[in-house]
Length: 372
Image (cartoon, rainbow, N blue to C red; front, top):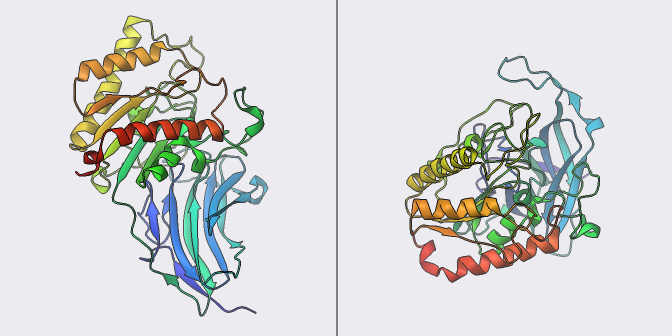
């Protein structure tokens, strides 16, 4: 029998990246898609301990071991019903996975291994990392600090990498799915950060629109970016918490919203050509943008949508916002196939296409944007 030792989640040799809840340092909660942790270790054994709240679906957690990507599948049958008695939220139909240990296959062809655990799915679940086990005579080793460059994205399912692994459906509508094709690691936001060698906070949620009460996420409240942008925990079925913006000051901020904004449940769609709605939508966008401009006084802001098909009038409204705010720090970017490439979610090659174009644009701004 292999003798093992436990390493707590609050070890200083574990690097965390993302808008993560560290209220309980020994069990940090990963909330947003793409949030991750990385460490290096010696030996030939590794197992990780996680727990999760699921919103009644299977859970898929992503990881990389020595550069090879794999998935941990937690079927909802393994989850037990959980009823909240705090009165803070209604999660009576949710399911909870008690802390469970998952063994990670490790080859013995190298002395030091590198491991990354990441939140592969968006708002389907909340995940806590409880720690890890390695061989008794092994250890976590020092690793480089996180990159000094920092980027932040605000977006929807495209930034979450939703349905990006449905490679047989490139340029087509999405196939029926239950989240099995979702992979935030291959979203254009995460790829862009890696291409730029930058940290990333990926503030993205599938179905999210700008305005509260619109879009597709978390009925019946349908929180929009106007609520989520300042949230740490934002999911409607669990107690909300606020984000401390002093914790992470990005150099570059990318807005990629405007896809889900026509939708209103049980009402006619919002019409961006309607002057009253257009002014309301723009005013909220400008309010959020102005707030972040104040919070990040040296950051460069890039406003965009994505290549997922949509009415180009939303892009023209964003053009107006850039003109109205009239700041050298607020830039407009359009992809080569902006709003015209696919009726379904962008697949991995299309996510890579967007990431390469956006990276080229950011690099064209010069190294000075990273100096603040």
